[in-house]
Length: 485
Image (cartoon, rainbow, N blue to C red):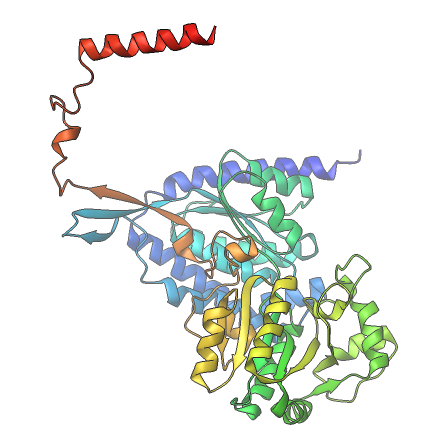
């Protein structure tokens, strides 16, 4: 007898949500020492499995570079844990003696975590550690093309958590994936909040359920290189960042906007670091190779090397090529290569002066990356602050690799694989999502100011109308009713 895949997925979602609920009832009573001991064990287990899980993800999905996925797994385990280790998530977490207010942490409950195929194991780790630190339970729904590696990442953390004293069922991962099953998970009565990382369709679905949701989707990150930049550093960083895991992190550079006086030199330096500047014929091939007619990306090209793309498209690239650069002069639907490209193809624009560069960056951001990220290479502080103040994005990264800076490995922003795009991008926050977003705060507040007399029972002001005033009001209402009839 053939088993209905949707029904199987729906039932699994229900079972895991119920298990998570029961586990969270117990975990919600854990003290801070217990929470931290379990999370430390999870982080260490994830860190030790980083290489194995990175190889599993690459083999299963066919995306990216295993060594780079290992680095992302290390970020999502040990580095993330170090950033939130000292965060209080149990009991009184803050006290303002002057205002006589106590702030008390309160877990959300059960989290539904939707994860992508591009960063499957690292996103599982980051969400699970953050949720457990907040005293939540989590049920993970991975992308169907990354089920096995995602499940193994979740299983690794769950086993470590249980060995350290966490209840069974605190971390769960679906194995029977379907749209119907994922929707059932998000809508389940035990689920209190949704944490969705992935494509626009997934994020829209998460927001449409009617529950609190952190939905974060695509970016279209411009990299502006000013005439004041350290060009050698900028060239090396841009090529390294765009080629990192074959551009699967949503904060990877999608287009360079080069200040005209330094554009030629920057191009030379990028070529020396492995950038191949495509001719018009190759650029035309890439337009049709990377994107479908509806503007969606051809999944066969996602997370692939320049050599793979060349073989697929029937063109050649020089030996040692790490990225392919395409010269562009338009932004919008008429230029597919101005979109987000989750592969080793980078757009190139030249503009005269930072003001024109600023305009071009905003154009790119509005086309596909509102609220997400921008990277800036400059030493002129006036230019840096102008970009910081004016760009409609929530991560403005200066003189670093956008890929690693946005996720908190090379900058001081919170380590995370779930990057909010704020109101500009349809998200509830522009933060890097972490433990702070997965628990509520109760406030125990004492009176510090006596109520005004007008609010007190017995006050002439609050005693209501007299009998004479009440009769007058009733008479006026009756007259108005008669007049209307």
